[in-house]
Image 1 (tube, helix red, strand yellow):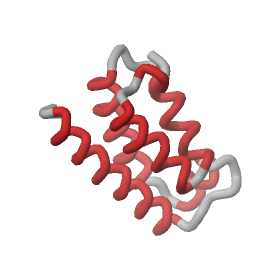
Image 2 (tube, one colour):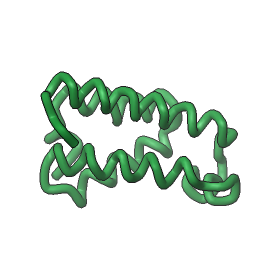
Image 3 (cartoon, rainbow, N blue to C red):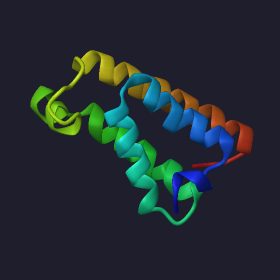
Image 4 (cartoon, rainbow, N blue to C red):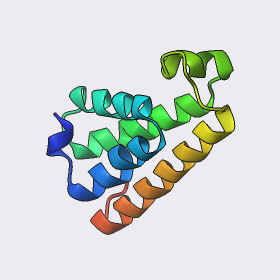
Length: 97
């Protein structure tokens, strides 16, 4: 699927929030959509990606952000915000993911 296939709520919750933080993070969430068959899978995969990035050390974050990583605490804060947005989307859509 493509990010254009996401509902407005999911797109705003994940893609737009990632872009507000850092374009590189947006690229990761955008690329993730290509491997998903539908929005439900995309949301599940996004949660997994968030959890994986939160575990990264500073060197791994540099790689994720193509050499120009924001401080880890800022990255984790942005990911927590996106996670909270996902919870809201799931409530709106009545999803049990």
